[in-house]
Image (tube, rainbow, N blue to C red):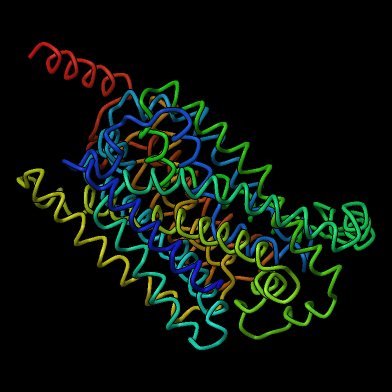
Length: 494
C-alpha cells in the first residue's frame, strides 16, 4: 500500500507541474513566474524550497549525533541568510528588474565579473542538488524494501524531478511548492505528535536531550579551534547562500517589492520554527530505540540519514507512514526542482548568453531546457559518487559563494566606490586563498573558508582603493535604477 501511495503521489506532483507549465510563454515566465506570485505563494516557495532533504534527514540525524553544536549552518545560518536577503537585497533586486542574480554583477561591474561570479554560483549548486537527489533515492530505496540499490533509486527520483521542472520552470516550482508545503506541515506535525506519545511525552525527550548536552550551542569543552569551526559553518551558510539564484528567484517572483520582502521574511521564520520538528522526531526516535545510534559509525556517511525512515517503517502505523513519507517526498521534491532550475538560469543567462547575444526569446527558452538536462546529468554524477551526508554536501556548496560572490554583492550594493577592479581582486584572492588552504592546511586553527572570506574582503578593499589598472565597467546602483525606471516609463508610454 505504501509504495502505491508513493507512486500516486509522484504522479500527482508531475501532473501539477505539467499543468502549471501551461503558463510558460517566455523566459520571464520560466525563470521568475512572470513576477506575479501573491504573498501566500511567495511564502510557500521560500519555505518549501529551503525545507529540503537535508532539513528532514541530515540535520535531524546530525543533531542526534552532535546536538545543536553540530548544526550551526542549518537552520541557524540558513534562516539568517533568508533574513539578510529579504531585508538588505529584496527591494534592490526588484527595482533593478533583474532576471538572474548574475545580472546584478553585470550591471554593477560589467561582463567579466558577471561571468566569473555566475560560474561560481552555478557550480556551488552541484552539492546542494546532489544532496536532494541522494535523499530522493534513499527514500525510494527504503520503500522498495531493498529491491533497488541506492544509485538505481537516485536515477528514478532524478527523472521525476526533471520531467516537471523541464517543462514548467518557476511556474511548476511555485505550484508544486504550494501543494508540497501543505503536505509537509500536516504530515510532520501529525508524526511528531505520535512520536512524542511513543517516547513517553515531550518532557521525556526534552529532559533526555538536556542531560546528554544536546542543547548546548557551544560545547563546554570547546576550545578556540572548535568555536572558529562553529563560526565558519554558520557564516558559510548565512553569507554564502545570500548570492544564490534560488533565493533571488523566490524574492523576485513576487507580484511587487513589498510582497518580496514580506514573503521572504515570513518564509524564513516559518522555516526556522518548523525545522525543529524533524529534529525532535529524530531525537525521540533515538530515545525510543537507542540501537539506532549504531548507524553513526557507518563508513558511508549517508547511512545515518536512515534514522527517521527506519523508525517510521518499523514502529509506526500505516497512516503515520503515509503522512511521513508524503511530507518527506514533498520536502525533497520542492527543493530539488528549485536547485536544478536556479543554476540553469544563472549559467544560461550570464555565462552562455553573453557569447550568443542575438538569441530570440524562443531560442533562449530552448537553451534553458537543454542546460537544465545537462546540469541534471552533472548532479547525478556527483550524487552517485559522493559518500558525504546531505548536510556536509550543502555546507561544502556554500563555501564557493562565500569566498567568491558575497563580498562583491554586498560591496556593490552598499559601497559607492566599489568597482570592477575590486570585484575581480575579491574573486581571485578569495578563491585562491580558500583552495590553497583546503589543500595545504585543511585542519588549521582557522577554517579554509574563513581564510578565503578574509582574502575576499581584502581583495575588494585593495582592488578598489588602488590606482586603476582595470578599466571600470558597469554602473552605480543609483544609475542602474534610474535606467530601469526610464525603460519602464518608455514601455508604459508605448
